[in-house]
Length: 245
Image (cartoon, rainbow, N blue to C red; front, top):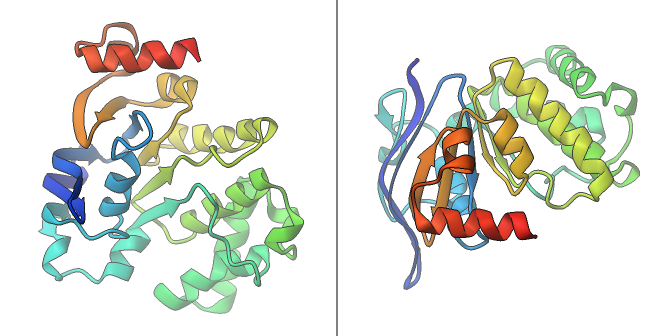
């Protein structure tokens, strides 16, 4: 399988604070990669750089063999191919559930109203939110908002979905409904990059685990390798703290 996206020597600094330090990272088509690590380790910044929501200080991000930092690929078109699901949902509060899922299709993909609505209904039905098409975000729960956000991302026909701690803002009883949707997507072969603290999800669903600490990728491998026989002491210390918590 070919790489969907490939990162080479990526660095990102905010002022004098170097958050990402020479990152090399790639994701193959159909692969589910979970990025784990402590808060402040650079996980979300890496995801935001991959989606061009943050501009790297240096390095390359290759998509279809082209470095998107060279300006040859329009950011809006590239972002449509790298669907992003945020921790805080980022729905448009003044739009209905249905309109949240059609506005990007119509503006970026130039789809007709009927085509956009048909696509939206397909994915809202898939995530169990087709009964709420006329609701505004304030009228639905956090878990429902996140399912709408996933449907919205899918409506753009992405080649990969990027999840930035998609369950961390949810009440515990709502986490399961979102993880169920994500498991379904993984089983359907969707390429996924997931920054998460949900270790059971990472262990059960991921093809590869990436452990980050202090702006670098410390270790990566299969869930079995990382969770049962981590090679690096920093990885072992992190997992020990997580298990104790």
